[in-house]
Length: 80
Image 1 (cartoon, one colour):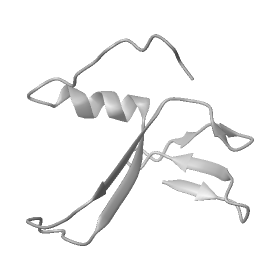
Image 2 (image 1 turned 180 degrees about the horizontal axis):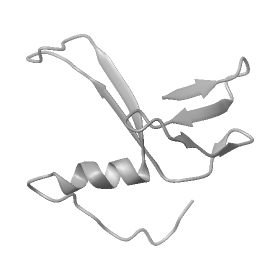
Image 3 (image 1 turned 90 degrees about the vertical axis):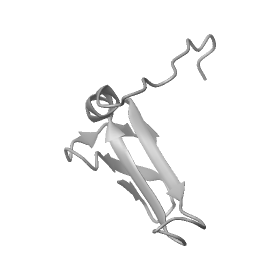
Image 4 (image 1 turned 180 degrees about the vertical axis):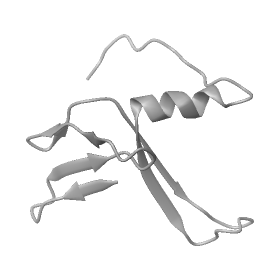
């Protein structure tokens, strides 16, 4: 869950699963966070709805451990 100032600057990020408050400094998120966004469309029971959430790195790791098929992982050579 993200919070923004009146000037639309990021001021807070809270993990939707464990409620951990992630470190935000000067509008910049300073730790690992998974941001999920999905817009449901036709053929979905949630047609016309949008879901968004944030997970801290620990909750993300717990979530992907439950996958029957592992996530695809690759090394990123250049970090921005």
